[in-house]
Length: 445
View (tube, rainbow, N blue to C red):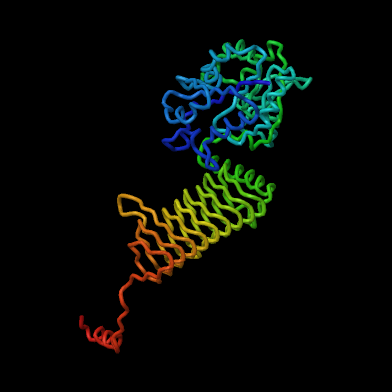
């Protein structure tokens, strides 16, 4: 069944101590609000409303293509925020399910959203999310009547001694029929110490009007809001645990899963082995049977089957490694394509380069791709052998099966099958070391 989602994203997030809007902070490489929007979409929603504040231009721009925006002109509470979209709510059929989500609860899952919506489609007028915790200090209590119907959400400051013992507490997320929001939302007052309009008052008002109200318990971590950097780190931890579990279930092996960090879009094929302390940034696609060794950092890279990377390797955006490529320790690659079977075993920088099949890049080799103003490409042919400590000054082409002597600085193209050397001739001075040491001892320059 079709339903509407309203995401509240107007909070200033002052405790984040950031110039960036709180919903745009990221976990696993994705903005908090985008996690929420994606969960809603995966649950089947096609009508997403986002309520923001007037000064959040960056946030509005980031999400404008995927939702309808409404502005909460002043920060007057959660009910006031939902009222910013009242004109949209009033146009909906009275029995259409509506769910209120929060931009700072990125761990909410599509299954939980669908479960709450199913309560509405089954005939409940209003359904509140909750979780069980003990002690329940600091949370609003879910108060029920003798039949188990939800009567009210009691804030801790207003709870009596009996109510304070309730361990089922408010999770914040609320689903209901559009007709209920059309009739009851405008009646919520601000008769409280903060003089704000609280969405939780929907419960008591709906109960008094005779509506069917229920609550559903949800995993507490799904409902955890983010208000500061510590809570952001906690959410990152929970999301990484989810992502690790997904990759393990898909056939990826990890020696120490708790040390591996994934992005939301990391793709890894079955039978790939990941050693400890590997970091995956966004836009990484790894095929099956690869081996990612410890302390490697990979982002914006595509790896074909049976590729070996690391340890201590860095693959930057634009890296493409074909099957059976080997990239060893302390190798950095950027915007480069290594064809099948090519090797760069250690201590090299390869940027803006095309490296042919079975080519071998010796230790200490660098492609000098930047002259201070522009970037240039280095092309290395199939089967070429680049000797250790070589500098290839782009733009330059090395032909198939060519051989570059160790320590060379190559500034011109090298033909296929050619041997190229570019270094100063070695000169040996007999007894030179002895004479130099003697001068040092006598203070001569």
